[in-house]
Structure formats: structure tokens, C-alpha cells
Length: 253
Ligand SMILES: NC(=O)c1ccc[n+]([C@@H]2O[C@H](COP(=O)([O-])OP(=O)(O)OC[C@H]3O[C@@H](n4cnc5c(N)ncnc54)[C@H](O)[C@@H]3O)[C@@H](O)[C@H]2O)c1
Image (cartoon, protein in one colour):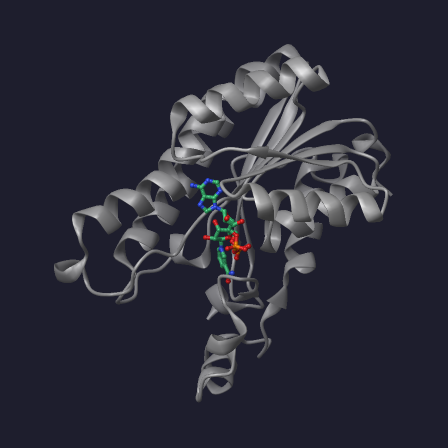
């Protein structure tokens, strides 16, 4: 279906778990060469091992995306080792500590903005010049339905995700004529380590999902991964600067 991914170089941040891992395996099943990054080597090596068992080309690179130098070094390493960079899914993120603005510590604010938003700026800053050298590329940034709405209790997360949608649009307009498309996605409620099983089993959780999601269920990470591939593929060749809600209708309410 996606012949265009064959032998192409794909970077996925936060690719050892959740949606990043699902997208990494999905790209690799179309014979792309995928580099996943994360902070923890053991987790990265485990994901690499699972991919090798399926004969998939998924390599781990240790990188904390909230550190601009590490991001710069990672992209230089990828281009040196693999020859180019064609696609990127800037996906790494955390939800941060829960509580209202008046109780949000400066550390929680800074850390959440650093990991969720500043990292996307660092990635774009160093990915785009390499994609220009490669003759073009596609970038998908992982935002959230929380990038569209406000609600109590996660101010830094909500602010960071609004920022991800904004910087994606800015990058799209700056690079549209250079054959680089940049879009963001806004997942709704997705079954990943960010929503651990204990939380999903809490009393009232199912009722809450049914009340806020018109499709009355969470999605699995593969349902997000297939949208990321579509946004990177020729099937979406005239789409840039957009944000795709993958939310079972949550934002349509
Ligand atoms: N799960 C959901 O319902 C949901 C909904 C909307 C958006 N999102 C967003 O999707 C993205 C992926 O999350 P997920 O749900 O797959 O959960 P996840 O926790 O499995 O994935 C996040 C990944 O980012 C990595 N990461 C965190 N900080 C990092 C850092 N400083 N450097 C490098 N890697 C780092 C984590 O180790 C993890 O692998 C996040 O940006 C999250 O905000 C999740």
C-alpha cells in the first residue's frame, strides 16, 4: 500500500512505547528504516529486540528530547549513519503532575513545557534542514485534544499541546514550498502507558469515556499509527498545516 516508505529514514521520538512504538512498527512493516529515541536504554533495547524478532528495521538511539544538544547530536548521527532523514513523528510527551494552576510548581510547568513543546521546536529546527537536503519530507507532531480545549487540572499539558498545534502550522507555512509537509495530530483517549490499566479499571472510568467520547470507547495505538502513516504518505499530498483529530468524535461535541 505504501511503497514510498521503502528504505526511507524515519525518526520517531518517544518511540519505545505507546503510539510511537506502534508507528515505528507500522513504518518498518513497509520496509522503512526507523530510528526510535527515548531516555531509557533498557526499554529501547527491548523494543529493538521485539522488532528484530519480526525482522523489522527499528534501531534505538538514547536521547532526552528536552535537551537541544542531544536532539542536534541525534539528527547529525542519523544523517551520518543512515544517509538522510525523510520522515519524523515528534511524539515524545508526558502529562505532568495534576492540579490547578495555583498549585502547579515551577518545576512541573518547566519540565512539561520542555518535554512536550520545546522538544518539538528543537526537533523541527534540526530535522527541517536535513529534509530540505533530502529533497523533501513529512513531519507529524503529536498534540492532543488537550491542544483544543481547556479543562481543570493539567494546565502545563494543555498549554504545551496548544503550542504544538501552533508551531506545526508555523513550520508548515515556512516549508510548504520546499516540499516539506508538517501536520499535527490530536489523539483523544488512547490505550497506552499514559493511561495505565489501573487507571482504566478505576470506578467510573468506563462511564466517563462513554459520556465524553461519541464512539464510546478508547482507541488503541495502532489506530493512531495508521493516521500518522497516512499523513506521511502520498495519499495526503495536499495536506499541510492541518491538525487531525483522532478522537472518536470527542472534539465534535
Ligand atoms: N494516551 C493518550 O490518550 C494521549 C492522548 C493525546 C495525546 N497523547 C500524546 O501522545 C504522545 C505519546 O504518548 P503515549 O500515549 O503513546 O504514551 P507513552 O507514555 O507510551 O509515550 C510517551 C513516550 O515519550 C517518551 N518520553 C517522555 N519524555 C521524554 C524525553 N524527555 N525524551 C525522550 N522521550 C521521552 C516516553 O518514554 C514514552 O516512550 C505524547 O506526546 C502524549 O502527550 C496521548
